[in-house]
Image (cartoon, rainbow, N blue to C red; front, side, top):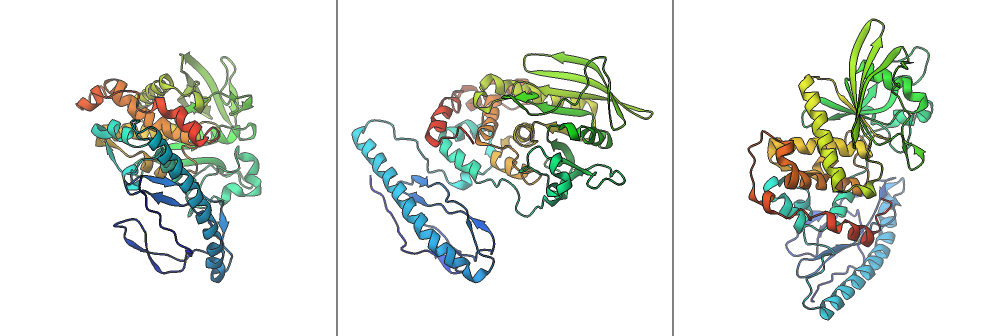
Length: 444
């Protein structure tokens, strides 16, 4: 197998010069100056003559100095080291791939990476082409696609959540609401920080505040949680996961048992109905404050504790769960936000909200953009769709609807597509274990 390797003896990032990529037909670009006192990571990409692409893992974070005149010096020292290591890794990869090709000339070409460009990974995918798309893109490329989404928005501050008086109100210190769209509860006179709760408004495609994503209540935030519910006039709560997961408390129980009403900061709670099935439990509560009374419903999905074991039957259950929530909310004509929480308010919560968005996209646009959906969610709350396994759930969810559940989820839709009817339903599920083994994603 012929391949071309371009090696620069020295490449300085941030020198302000015009640069051209060694790949054919690549445009020139400006090597912009790096910002002082900022963390950067470096990776090396290599491409063969037949358009196969491989990319090394990212380097450790390199922190630039506080003064700009020494930034390029630091990067100039680090980049050659990374390039040398990266080229060695790439050379080994090419050698192994070439040896395997020679030894097994009749075997189908290895699908370690595909030559799918970033712009093809981050586009609107028509439903009629979705199954073909996920056949043609390798899962390592999906993993790289996921890695390209920033954990949080660099321009949005979360300084309020970091204040010392709010430390004990955060279940996870690395997942905090942005100041710009955090939910504020009424300030209690004389209590500093009493307007803070770890909760974020999440917008849909319009400017309406459709959801509130929040962490599972702690013992010391139970009152704050119910203050938020009352003040925001929320009528629906979605809970994802059990109270205890893998022996650790993921969420403290914040609803009463039958015949045992409880009070949280002047809000009295009565459980009036509870219905269980194999996948979720629905609860109806009466919430009272002073002389006002409201009826509230909680949808508690109890079968999502382990992302590793999230098989197809779970995906179908989640889709039905979302459809049921959406059906009841739409029937109520409520304009108040839906409260969605798991443990940290980002992982399963983000996945639920992303799937709900994607289902609405499928109905309204006949296309989906999974990358953009997650990227937009992380502009409202950090770490939404927290790990790669949850990111795959989004692809599985769309695939599952197209192959098995379209008429069930969209009973009044006129959408018909032969590819959806005839394509195999084994597109993603069979290769997930291989991907985890290849990339050691057991802890992502």
